[in-house]
Length: 366
Ligand SMILES: NC(=O)c1ccc[n+]([C@@H]2O[C@H](COP(=O)([O-])OP(=O)(O)OC[C@H]3O[C@@H](n4cnc5c(N)ncnc54)[C@H](OP(=O)(O)O)[C@@H]3O)[C@@H](O)[C@H]2O)c1
Image (cartoon, rainbow, N blue to C red; front, side, top):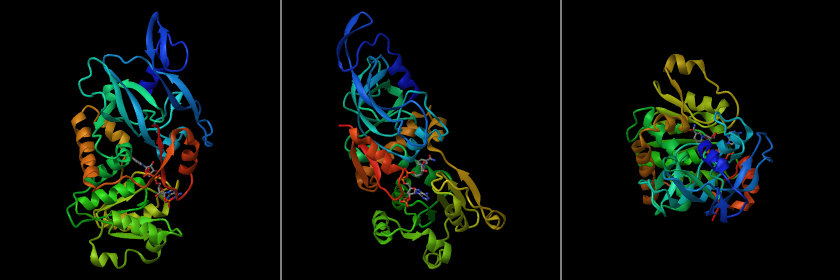
């Protein structure tokens, strides 16, 4: 986002707000403007987010102008605004890390994108909660426009995270088992669906809730083999499940605390626990016997770092996104059940995201 913001804010000679023909640096040109959700300080209350009108710089030789179509509100967006995320933007900052846009204008030396293409940001920190942006063409990846809008808007963070964790930590073959907590999260739902497409079985842990049966049915309809609550796992262990399925080799930890410890204790000898979230905000409970007698490996995964490590390999990143879009198109992967929120009602979306047991919100800009 830094590069986008710097260009937006430092565009020389901006005169007045609003999109129109204006005198800029001695020339009359059309100046495009956008609405953006901007914050200028970190804080726990999230009241600092405001909708502002910003002028956009002219499209340069290597840049493009896009109009944002839809962008979700993810936990990491909230952490960024609160100032607790490992990468923080410079102020003024535009919120939002994920989303899909449509290319409206292309610089004369851009060969990779065309007007009308759908695009997603390559890196975290883009500032997707805005109606338009001008950025370098290399800051974007194209996604096919024949996948659903909400699928495209939510493909570049959570499904990519699920995809990498299922491919990069344990050698898994059809019939092998993966166990995860936070199974109803967007990442968890992507894990269920990608694992099912790979022929893997999944054991899915969720927090207890009044509508547990309905949630379990929903996750099973996506391909989950088993759904249990943290409380059931704590009191009875994997019990009957292990009579049907092999012990899990891979555990995915979205939550931490006791829940993460339960996933760890359920793993087979030589298994791997990958921690990618800390939703409970409690330290992971690690039973010594899992390390001593089962030689479990503890790993962490951060999609942002993975993308930065592979930034020069555009093909690798594009091929992962293409594979996930193919799954979206084939109906093997669906976005989580999202609640669409008109862009101007963004406060509702932010408030819902910090409450428990809520569906993910997605801002619709168009
Ligand atoms: N490392 C990475 O690269 C990476 C990438 C993507 C996401 N993440 C992280 O993964 C996590 C999930 O993200 P998401 O977008 O998939 O989330 P999401 O769809 O918004 O779902 C949030 C999940 O967290 C659970 N949860 C919320 N508060 C909790 C608490 N106090 N204790 C236990 N569980 C709680 C929710 O369960 P209920 O329904 O029971 O409330 C739900 O399962 C976040 O921590 C996010 O930052 C990490």
